Image (cartoon, rainbow, N blue to C red):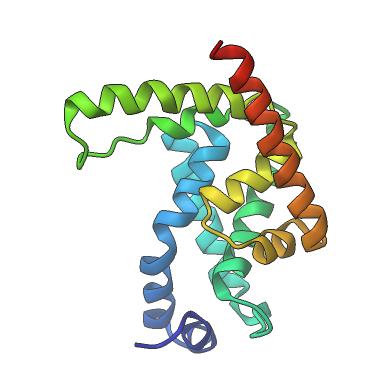
Length: 177
């Protein structure tokens, strides 16, 4: 099986190679966009825009890093552009509304309650901290990859995530008492 990086090189001349990259990364890009946007329609739209921009700009991918980080960078920039145009808040709470049919109905209600509490806590974070958490958790990126996408040093991203987790713990401690 070819690596993402090999497929990205081939995708400059092959639609089949790009189609394979699309299949491999669709879920992660959609989850990230849904986590940031809060509704299915906008998440689908920005996911499509992300892959269109990635296909058009595939020649700019350099093998210095992972393709997944480069692609999530495209998704991140599409997301930033969307919010610049929309000038609204970042509704992370809707990220938990994705249905998982593999969960038993009785377990789903319990899990949904705790996810709603976490989503409410995430909405209390600054946008930058929420972005770092969303890229790492929903986008599935490593610390170094989040740093690359956000154009920050790994130390700065580590601090953002550390502070975000501290803020989340404090928020949950005060609301769960």
